[in-house]
Image: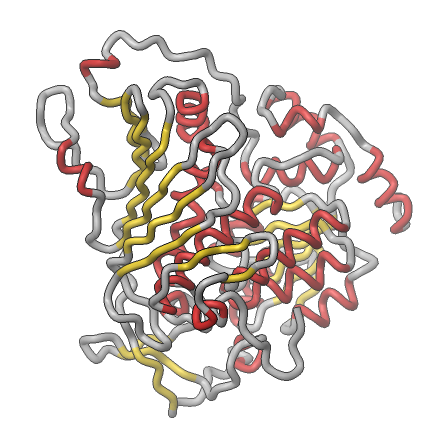
Length: 446
């Protein structure tokens, strides 16, 4: 199977119980075994270090054939780790030259280049794994979601916690009616992205192609950030999240992980109203202590629900009234709280608890119905090989990303947003509409 035609015929034609993955009744052991016996995929990666490096390691049992990174030091290290791969500084060149040799692409760049890199790969009909948040703007997220559907591609967002057993047990409890009808949910994360300022003057490091790093954003000289205490910090490779041109602050960084559980359990999609409050927005820099309220309409048999996000030192007021079995305060640094008509459920990445504790002392949990994951990355690999679904395809994670980014748009604009999801239109604020997307600089397209 050396030809492109044979590879694609093989990958599209395999159908080993793929549909069962969506509802989680597959056998994890059988799925892992069947994946390992199929032909290996040829994968390319855009971004090679830090989180991107972790993504590559998680699929390293496949063929890593091409790598792209704007940082030569990172690229050299990745090339040494995967000596059979071809290396590129410019991911556009890589995709053009490797189009006939790759089956799928992993995108692990800073947020502002997720969309153009992903869109180019998907237009070449390459399956895609992309880090979260899916994109830097709401419009970009919708474009990628539509491209995945148009080309029938296997996609997965890098919300790795989704594959954990804890989230699955919470979903079963909420959807099984353990706490009754849910009309209110809260999500809080103790993350602090404080205001910083960009400064220029120093030359870019020799190993960094600054123009390629900027990608579609504003054309500016190499810059660094200055913290409130005067400390100068490079924005590459880790501090770019504090700036709107490149990231989306704490909400963008952690929203897709923590709001994910609420989205999944309550079967959410598109909010109709978004209202954010917090410190006075900085024109270029993110900050913390945001409170963002989302209103979601009824979904089939499910009632309307309000979901509120808190970051920094903000917390839902109801949290202070919650108690452990011994009567001590229930202090969770990060978490999600579902408020139902028959009780409450609090959770985080690795644990959950039904409340009030006494009320659920004799509660009999339902048998698990969502099977243990074979691994977030391996779900994606398996789905490509079997023509099956993934749990965090862009059909699901695209609307999740849109919700997160609409909170950012509301905060930056200072406006409560009334949202027409079908037309990607803010119906009540032309000022807020400008934060739904931005113009790319010359030479870059979506």
